[in-house]
Length: 111
Length: 110
Image (cartoon, rainbow over all chains, first blue to last red; front, top):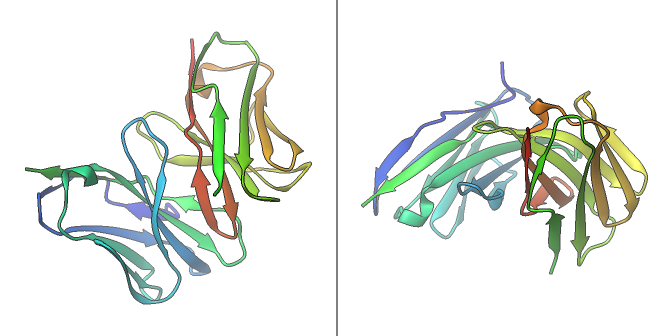
């Protein structure tokens, strides 16, 4: 079992719609959760992070965390062509400086 | 603000040749530093991380090595490259668990 699993996609959404990305993790000691975006040929950029159960909103992005279910998700509202990229989920244990990355979900926003 | 640099941006090397990739960070002190590799179409694989000068932890046994000669400098090396070393090499810096990536070096071993 992989430490961090994501649906590879591609996830195709129409412009203006909500994109929903899911991520599950296997280590119950995980405490910090991150979403990164990687455009083709570029390095990952941090979208947002979440530490506590529930929802955290940042602009068009909402991260949702459920530690009991070992599940973290990312909602992208009003999807734009610039959201066409691979979004990576990453997980860290408390006081551990290492991140475990999922393989990423490729999102395509169609006009 | 913090900035992370990597060079070279791209590199084509023959099998068996040596390798040296450099990463430097500006605007912060005593950061955690990381080297990752991303093979084509694959996820990020952590290779090395460092919490201080001269402190290197290796995650994957391989023909690569890392060094941290200065607080904000991280170097990835190899004495003899293999075909399987091809990939996108990313350096990252971090405080706590949050990490920020450099622009990367694309390495092709022929």
